[in-house]
Length: 294
Image (cartoon, rainbow, N blue to C red; front, side, top):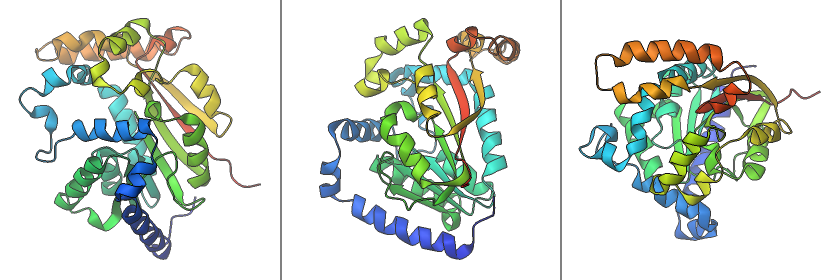
């Protein structure tokens, strides 16, 4: 795929600036359906503008007890970051439902021509912009408030998209066609999502409703959703992560954690290639590719 030109990038920046201004009004907010307003409010609550690492705040783990499990997700994080390093340079990159902008900033550092972060949460976008300024990345980043199911982007305007842990917050019947519309022919999406088929993990989700919105817990990604995505894209490089590695979480603050996690990850790399064991994984990653125009 060709790299984008400076004029193309500048034109898109101007379009996004007008879009962001239009979406920072009370009138636009009121046009959103209730579930989207709830998502915005929920994610405003989970962010803190005054610290780079809110997880280090006193009491953070007590308020967000599910965060402890992420200590065991190094394997998935490395896979995701390697994809960004490989696919961001020279491209128009979108951090879809960007939250605090971590992945969009990573793409900017990797050399994206323009790294765009979008989110329905104004506080998330404000945080991402602040972090971009602190890191000297304003030159090739743009963070804006918009609806992931109706972005307002021009057709065929972006090269790469990363959707990390966000599809289960969205109505896929809107989000997937919208992603296909804005992606250039030959463009790629990397998605990594929680998976809905492990009964123990699903039970935990239902027992901790305060940690997620009502819509979210009912829309964790399933194999049926993966099949639905194939109506819009070619799906490639499906990989399942984290089953035995989750069991190492209680050791996370001990000297045995690193060794236990390496062993568990090695086991996961073997057994999670075997259906139906793979469907018990915590998460799944996959690439969605828009076919080149014939």
